[in-house]
Length: 137
Ligand code: DAT
Ligand code: MG
Image (cartoon, rainbow, N blue to C red):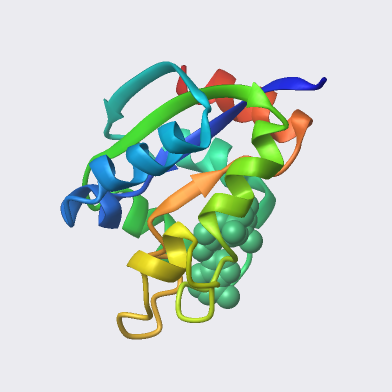
């Protein structure tokens, strides 16, 4: 068994819309364990570290602005294969086309070319999870 930890963020749109509880309910129903959880209001430096892989892309600055638009909830989540398991729960990046049954597919849509408003972040690999958890916790 591959017991892992991953970083989940309920992004500012998810918190502002009152979806945190619904998202946590899905995480808990799936059987993953909350190791740590806290409300965060990241500064730009923190977000530059978190999204370093996207620096220079057209959506980078709007993404950072969006992530500074209100509080997020950071979660240290544990479980067997939780990294890919949470990514599966979250759904694909674009909430308009994310599959129904996923967080992004059920709760998200395009609010005017704002793909970044897709409710959640989840680490995409063991290396990303370790790197990102050290930024937020
Ligand atoms: P994911 O969050 O599914 O891992 P990603 O790492 O490729 O997606 O991108 C990070 C975030 O950046 C993503 O959640 C939303 C935003 N984003 C990605 N591609 C985008 C695009 N083409 N236009 C606007 N925002 C985008
Ligand atoms: Mg990503």
